[in-house]
Amino acid sequence: MTTTADRRDVDPFSTRRRVAWGVLVVAAAGAAALAVGMGTVPIAAGDVVAVLASRLGLGDTPGGAAEAVVWNIRLPRLVLGFTVGAALGVVGAVLQGLLRNDMADPHLLGIGPGAAIGAAIGASAGGIRGAIAGGVFTGVLTAFALRRLASGPTIDRTRLILSGAALSLALSAWVGFVVFGADRGSMPPLEFWLLGSLSSATWSTATMTAVIVAAATVGLFTARRTLDVLALGEHEARYLGVDTHLVGTILLVVSGATVGATVGAVGVVAFVGLVVPLIIRLGVGPSHRHILPAAIVGGGIFVVLSDVAARSVLQPVEIPVGLVTAAIGGPVFLWLIGRRSNV
Amino acid sequence: MSDASLSAQNVSYEVGTALLVDGVDFAARPGEFLAILGPNGAGKSTLLSVLSGELIPSSGSVRYDSTEISVLSGPERAVRRAVFSQRTLIDVPFTARAVVEFGRFPHRHDTSISPDENAERIHTAMELTDTPHLASRVYSTLSGGERTRVALARVFAQDTPIVLLDEPTTSLDVYHQERVLRILRTSADQGRTVVAILHDLNGAAAYADRIMVMAEGRVRAQGAVADVLEPVLLSDVYGQPMEVIDHPLRAGKLVLIDDRHA
Image (cartoon, rainbow over all chains, first blue to last red; front, top):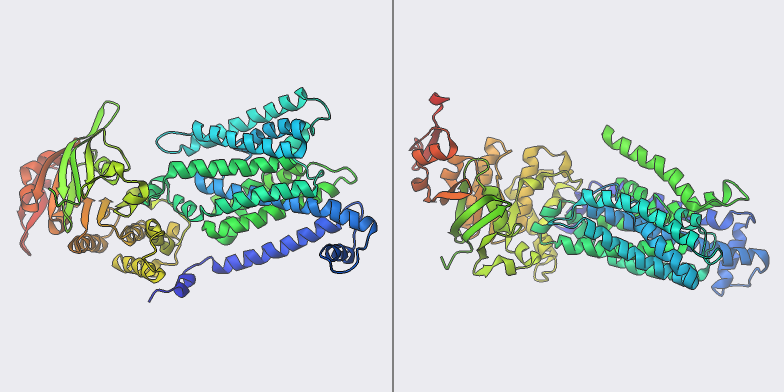
């Protein structure tokens, strides 16, 4: 009698979701094209295709400047930008689901700045590998600290968010102490850590980050149904057999590791984890089975496009990508919040 | 006592110096519908939280069958008891159907239940609560009474031998109050143990097997309906004069509020 067919029928979000995915796919393709084609050296679409084809063993290499720019600079930068955005998008969605609060964002909660401390120390000791390892380590530590600050008979969500905000500011200051206390030249400057930049992207940075983010994302994805149940509230979730303490700790720690890896690679890129899940939820509905994959793509698009803007708005000067994400994300967040009170 | 599916032995719960539940003893068998009555602040909801495993008693113990619930994990408890509370009625953007489907969450690893059976349980629970027409509506857009019925459907979709309910009829109209009480009666008749906090004395009188009256954290009386619904006790417990008469339409009792003193 009741089959999977009429289960689909009762989903009022299905049409909207199809539209949303259409927009995401088109936007992702457009963002990728812009990211590879635009810059101080404009590259024709044909040359980009030729470079990709030759790398896949289909045809001769076009050689010259186009090859070097596309393969060595713009593609790794595109991959890294998408990876970072995807990570921040999915972590933001998970934290907002876990804490049932729209202000939940890995950087506003202090995880990003916390990760930046370890990343900066790691960078001076071991370059990009050190930065990523250090970022993961102190990202996880910050997540544990947050969990401790909010511990009690239930996860105190308000206390967690307020503690996170204070932690975020305090830890940002500590990043400054680390950077100014270290040897000039042994690590990227403060603005890299606190505002983010994709300018040093290489294939090795992109691959390392992508592997960590992919593994963590698979892990976070297994929690999708639990996150849905948590939307009913912590008590209800426990009535349905969810160990809310354990789930909260695991999700915070995996989030810390994921964000830590991105901070090691590109520094703190603000507002992505805050704004992307909010917009995505409007498009795909409340179920995390749909939110998480869409937040991955949406976050990737946001950072890639912001990076295109960071390279082009003040050409030839390149500005930190976090300035662009904040400049766009801030007003969008305000608009989303205002829109809500009108309905 | 040994055939009880839900029992409490000398259960107390205190917060600071306040003793919210004080030495409660009871046992309920499969097939039994126990109504808990009492004024606001009597400790009924706290007792229900203790029975659900949500609160750990300061002393005493709660058992499902012969198993002390403190040794059961969250997932193990969730397949043995379902809980309806007023907390269920928060705003969520899910559809009513999705909310009911959450009732199947504790059974998600049970490979002996086919997807069709799962869908069937959801459907049955929604039929029972008169909610199929609400299936694709967003839960947060429903009226209070509709939400209550959807939340109840979730509880029945969970399909557990023990069902604990905190004021399941409070926001319902007369038709749906009767309907919910009848559902609870039927669930008990099907072999479940149903424990419900009610404010509707006559509803309890009509549908429950046994009544427990609480006041100030203690059990003031428990037993068969006719023995417990007694005017002196009720008037004392509620601080409101009441009268109990024979029901004019059927066998049984009818509680009247004596409003001449009002």
